[in-house]
Image (tube, rainbow, N blue to C red; front, side, top):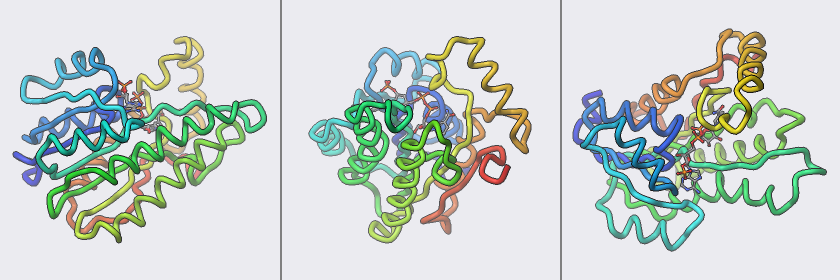
Length: 237
Ligand SMILES: NC(=O)c1ccc[n+]([C@@H]2O[C@H](COP(=O)([O-])OP(=O)(O)OC[C@H]3O[C@@H](n4cnc5c(N)ncnc54)[C@H](OP(=O)(O)O)[C@@H]3O)[C@@H](O)[C@H]2O)c1
């Protein structure tokens, strides 16, 4: 990963799960990494696992002025990864519209705001994280699929508009991250076991599986406008 050595990397949503795994891999490749998210305490805990070279920034992707100010105050980044999202989910007729809108605002508009204000070096990369529901809808999570599909379309379009900046999207399947920690442990384990049994890969993914794909997108100079599926075969299974 020589391409990452000394490069300036920002991981929005880097305090947990997939974003933290990306940050860890980038630190390992010699990059100067900043992780950003809303919670100072989560950032402080995450940076302990990343080592003293990583920096932190409290940033809420919902806060347009905050996002603009963050990029005004920082030098251009060589790679920006957006893994930040908090997306309430539920059936169409039960999920209150306000919560449905907040899901879109968090994941789609959050990524859009970062793209809109990011100061990027000339040959930078921008990588979004979507999710396999964009291609394989679930009757229980229709909104998630729509948000992920919108994000993938945004990535393809921005690859044209922001060229020569490269824009890619990584689409995970079910990954064992703190996203699922609100479920009680027995229910979560049962869900993971069911998912693993049904998937061609016969396993639930790990954050490092997605980090590998993100680093591929960051360092492969011919990759732009791509959506890279890493879903254990969920889309084909
Ligand atoms: N895990 C899966 O099975 C799975 C599957 C498909 C797709 N995905 C997608 O992968 C992405 C990462 O998920 P994950 O599993 O890594 O979740 P996670 O462990 O919950 O991490 C989410 C990260 O986003 C940050 N965040 C949330 N809202 C934010 C905001 N408004 N502004 C800034 N930071 C914010 C959180 O930190 P703070 O709380 O400190 O803000 C945290 O660092 C999400 O887009 C998710 O939809 C995950």
